[in-house]
Amino acid sequence: SWTPEGEVKTHSFEASFQRRFAQGFTLNASYTGLWERDRDLYYNEFDPLPSWRQTNAGVPHRISATGIFELPFGRTKPLARGGVGNLLLGGWQVAAAYELQPGPLMDWGNLFYSGDVSAINTGERTLDRWFNTANFERDARKTPAAFHARVFPQRIDGLRADGLDRLDANLQREFKLWESLILQLRMDALNVFNRSQFEAPNRDPVSTNFGRVTNNT
Image 1: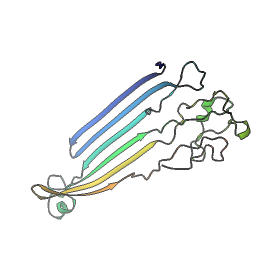
Image 2: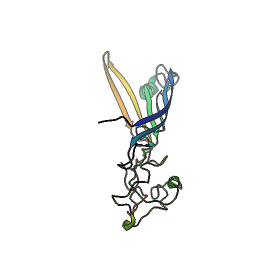
Image 3: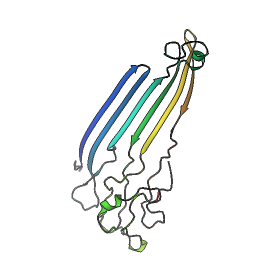
Image 4: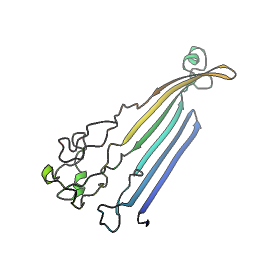
């Protein structure tokens, strides 16, 4: 029969900021903080209860913001109110959307490791060495077999794959052709900073690419 043995502990904080249209500018920004632990994983079939682990159902921090700015040119603006200036520059607006959050926690297999696992999440984080690869057993003949009890954690606190850091923007203008007909010109710039989103690094100690990031999403 089924028994409810899992548990979840969660603490969260949310904050938002809004600035409605004033002098042609509006801004909406939000921040979410999350602390969550899940007790939903049996490391071994003989464990009496599931073990606690960091969740991948959310991220500890997330920032998002959207904004619109109407350029100060045109008939109702302080600059270029008429003539050629209004014809060329009037009515344009710039909009942007920004997202920032860390990546997901990485899941690990059953490995042999000597020392404190917190040391894995140390050192300079580069594509060639995303985490500290020292103290892992890398000889394939000495790695855990199927009958070995698991002692290595499935997730390591704070050790995550590449996060999201993205800015999208657009420039647009509307032309009123008739009473109910509007022509819109729009240019979108996706991923303005041209930042690559990388996949999680290799976590197989017997691989020559162990600890390296070899692909992007």
